[in-house]
Image 1 (cartoon, rainbow, N blue to C red):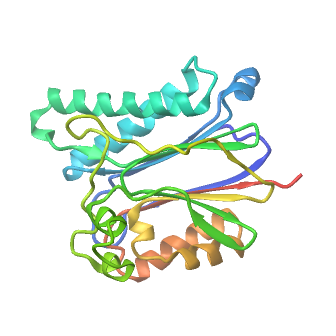
Image 2 (image 1 turned 180 degrees about the vertical axis):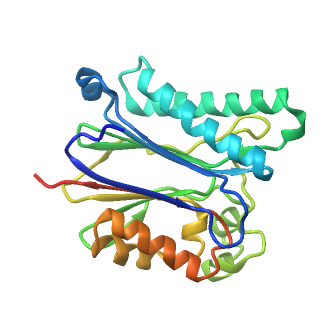
Length: 254
């Protein structure tokens, strides 16, 4: 895998302590051609499959592969448009696969895809995996969980404390592969990236057991590789009830 100068990258996935299989999937890609790299930049994707072991694993793998292939070969000059096309294609691919394999009906996946190009970050997001930015000693969550409980929270029907322990906190309102159209989340405009910015993409196997402040501390005080290792071990020490997957991209200073 080619990683050109300009970022530090680390990624890690772990089955956790309770599951027998890993239904998470991740990918990182850059175009091989230098000219295409100037046009497309870098892509990082994290997906968390659902629908039983086989269905979940296939759905997350399809999502990452289709998003990567679509993004790298899309003719649009706008990375945000390319990410939108990539998520739409992944959604259709999972639906088509489920239609051909009725025993996998209900398969789906979260998907959070990030593109870095020309000092800006674009993203597309479906489900409850998360994208964070760590800058100047502060952590900011850039995505919103597409879950039943987050909808209750936004409507003011429950408190953040109640949301954290709600029995239905993992019920998704949107996932690639679900019936009908999927309301993906995109930023209003590409986000300017500053030297030293660090971006963390993770599944709920991490953010369900590790707080934002703990992520901030691990990422700030360590290399991306060591931060990945520490965060996975932290989640596992608290039960590791789900698969745990994360990618960390640190933008190098000028």
